[in-house]
Length: 171
Image 1: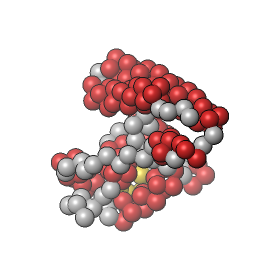
Image 2: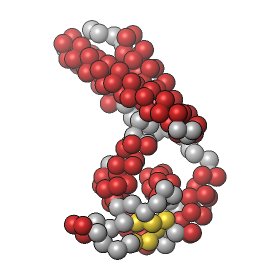
Image 3: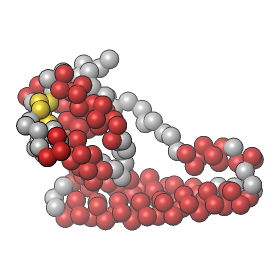
């Protein structure tokens, strides 16, 4: 296990908590807003990691709020763990594209199934690319060069996916 003893999801939560204390729901919203175009996190991952981070002393619980919502704040130990995580080699991409997986078994699809698959994927990637472009533009306008650069990765990814979909075999 790496020196930090945290996985990328836990590290993302610690990174988001640098903005200030947040509840699990607020962290989920912040992750979707800031990281969603290029890094996915599920609600269950967020709520699974927070107690682990608390047990490790990387976050502390605040006073319960409405509906028993519990704010978490990063600790000095959590900031050090996050810094160590940033210094580690990032490892390899975990590429898992559900459309490419289905295309790999294209011979078992009907022509109409493939057309529907490609149409749906093209619509998704076009919308996601437009949204990432807008977010990148906004980040750049707000002086967030690093956020903008990460969002440009999402733009390039969706552009590449759209290009690939145009050349994928239809029958």
